[in-house]
Length: 281
Image (cartoon, rainbow, N blue to C red):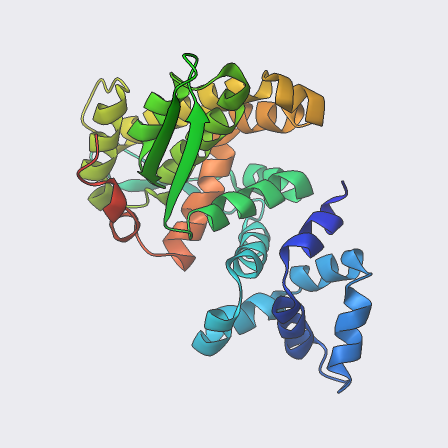
């Protein structure tokens, strides 16, 4: 499926109206334009690329409240890509948990240039706006298991991966990769360290030292392994998703840096997002 079609399937009619009101300023037949956009996904993609859209979203609290998460993150990741010029810095942590610049913005920009990768990251971010999930799986012993877990509960996902049928492991491994990447991407200050270290302890991620850098690297490695398992799963091979998950595994550090930039400038800090995690295990 073409990436433009993916976008149109995820945007509501209200989102399309918002796009039209924000960007189509020389016409007043907005409902007609919305009808046209439903059959013009490539035009919708061009509108999402317009810097004026993100300026409207970020500069107007009422506009931001009216937009769906998918619309906001679609515009925000495009803004991140625009900000990642050739000499633009990302950051890493040193042993004292201080950020230092790394001038690899061009690599992050290149990673985000691919529509499939960008769409995946948007869906990943949207998925963490939905609170709690409840799933039902059949174990290898054919017992029905109901499992309720917070979206930030990596320990629950790791346990779940060991008991579900092989056919169900694709979804679980994908989610383990997503959560590991999301948490690593949300680490933008030393305030995140206690939470990340607790998460690593819960799931048995080995930490050789005490720095936030090592915690982030451990989460990246956990995500990389999960995405590789997902890439080799029959569902990924059958549906043509294997290549995407292999790229996510191989370039997870670039995806993490894109999310770091997003969290640092346009989202709340990690502790405010992570309340459901505390007390699990």
